[in-house]
Image 1 (tube, rainbow, N blue to C red):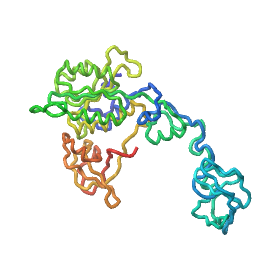
Image 2: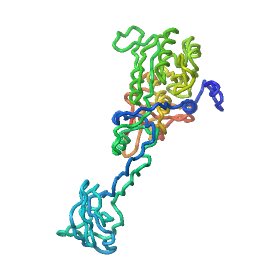
Image 3: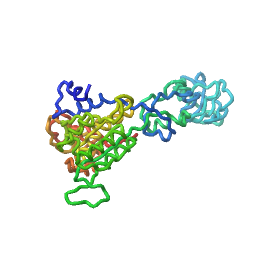
Image 4: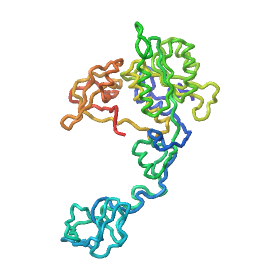
Length: 431
């Protein structure tokens, strides 16, 4: 079924007033992840997506061990009421246990990570123990098996340590290293070509002529793609000329899984654009009920000479973003980011949580569209508070640089009063 036919099946579709949620859901339904695998050195796997389940080759931990510094004892020796006096035989260290078993009335000093000696079944933390020569005095109330980590407690041999689709962050890299794996199987990097369109654009490093502006969009797009771990291809600035634009999009579709454009092509301001997109593939031109970022295009560009089969399906996905710098970043983060992770094979796709905060000022908002205002979030007297960045225009890129979050004002919401609760999406977070 064509994209247009699928889109028309939406219960209340309207290409001139599509909600952000509808657009996001429609895009996700079309996408099939890459499936080509490759083995890479572990340090090169950061930010990649795991291609197959990783099974633990052994138990983690590999043996029973103490979770605390303290004393390994026999629980049967510890009195339920009153103190217990035990003789200390020696010390068990991590990597070097105590070989002699303990008997009635005996114990062993034990360090974190050391295996308990034979006969010991409980660890008493050192902070509650009183020393008396070569003896210790243990208070009552100790639980059987306390402070002992059992073999296989974290991971059992032969069981999945990580499942396919997991995005490999520093924690996952460390976990894989703990299993002794020097290489890991991951999906190939997603190839993304990007370009800007418009006769008014200048590349940095060239003189700025009258009525011209420097192209910032390619640099923000490059940064966003690079942080996601994509393989990027910068096709530069494409002039508003049918032949030039056709050649650029054909090159992009042949080289990449995804093509991202910013500027006039996204909504077809130039008369030839929609016809060109129809010739090159199938592209839907939307007006999304959101601010900023109302105009957007989504579709696929056919790859010359490639059958409609295989991993790429004979086509490259196209995201035509608006030309205003802030709108480019908003539409990327609200639509493209999620789609790229889905194409990478990430499962589940990492989502940016919506966190509650008190808005310190009044905000104007028109019901019937979703708005993404730039905000500055801070912790004041134990309460998260957000204030809008000074300038909210879709061409004011400084508002993105000054802000640290989006203030997300939902579709049906109207004006916001000072002190109202709003949802925010942080630009950055721990990974």
